[in-house]
Image 1: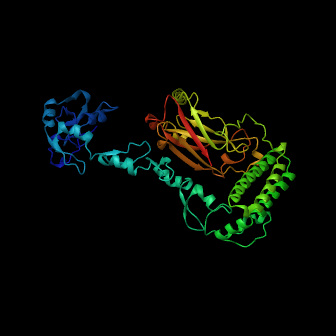
Image 2 (image 1 turned 30 degrees about the vertical axis):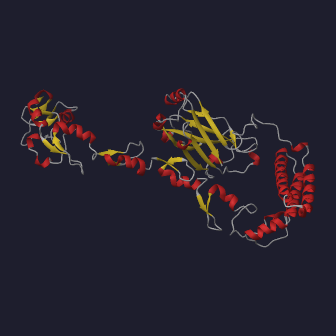
Amino acid sequence: MPGYNVFNLAEIQKDYLCIICKLILREPKQTFCGHRICESCFTSEIENKSTFTCRGENCNEQISKKNVFLDQSFKRNLLELKIGCPNQCCNWQGSIQDYDKHEKNCECRIVKCTHLLCDVEIVAKSLKFHLNQECEYRFIKCKFCSAVTEARKLKAHFNDCFKYPCECLHCKSRIPREEMELHIHPILGVCTKMIIPCPFNAIGCSTKHNMNYKEREKHFKDNLIPHMRQLLSQNLSQAKSKDEDWETHELASDIMAIKRKLQNIEKDIRNEGDRNTCYSIAISELNDKVKQLIPNQFLPLEPANGLNLTNPVNINGNFIWKITSFAEKRRQAIDKIKTSFYSEPFYTSIYGYKMCLRIYLNGDGIGENTHISLFFVVMQGQFDALLSWPFKKIVTFYFVNQNSRLLDVCSSFKSDVTSNSFQKPRMDMNIASGCPFFFPLTKLEESGYVVDDTIFIKALVE
């Protein structure tokens, strides 16, 4: 470390200044020619050579290790020298011997942000505010869905946040993203400004003109039974033209959904009294037809490829991965014995996309040694030929805090339809895609993320 850089340096006598760094001497040494030099400056000058030329005024003597010695008497005088702190906004004044302690703790000194990836330099007393309010790498909670993400990723998170208020194109209301599909649904939607024709046109409804919300509601009420008959008739004709088990199963699901809806409608109508007896009779007839549409071939298919159809965690795109023996697995990752681990497969639905997770407990690529990296993998599934490609979903990762879910660390991304990672798999699995900076290794020491040598990773595919 070179000499002391102080506020009143211009007022200090030259005898107290190092001939190399021109600052107040720190651990002074005296040369045989009478000049003084900081111990660290001397070490730097003499490194890899036997002598160096003295930089004292009008002096060209050759200095070696043998003709330099500690000047203890001068050092005692130096320690009593009165100086001022050079940092702006600091008014500290005192002796050299007190400055060493002040220099390390001065609130006006310039420090680097303590986050590993942040290069911002800031006055020490403002560091706490920077970490809590300004650092783009700080973790903050989304005010809409409470997910935790880095500040620099918050804007991108809003693009995918399922609770972010989006503007309806019709009524201009702000509606949470997860409710928008229902808000503008042609049958169940409540948007008062959406003007569309009857959605049952495609299956036979004769009303073709556009209607607003109130007109559609009246139309649905007046044509309830015809609409149900048209919908049921369509499913019946489709069932007759399709032979494969998976298609038959899908039709069975649709028909059962219609049956449940008819039962609810029947209940509501009966509550209105005898004047709706004719409606009840008509619905009863429709229910009889539904029963006739569900023979044995509509029973669910047998589980394939080891898929556990009774486990709802694995077949609805909501997957929780429990990783035990975390310390040992992380040690293997650090020692490069086994750098990554795969989860068991999970599915978006019984006959949906097959997926898994891949985790690097000591990071991968640009995240190595600083973060846990987590990636999403699309796998080759039995029903890929029947699914829509490329894969178009929003994937959200959570590092679960076992003490408080409010402290979960969250990261989301939307599948890139141009990437090979989300095309129809041609091998067992596609190239993984995800978050190299998923979870900072420094946060592992915080309470709740590793409990009983176990961590939990959650993935949500929507």
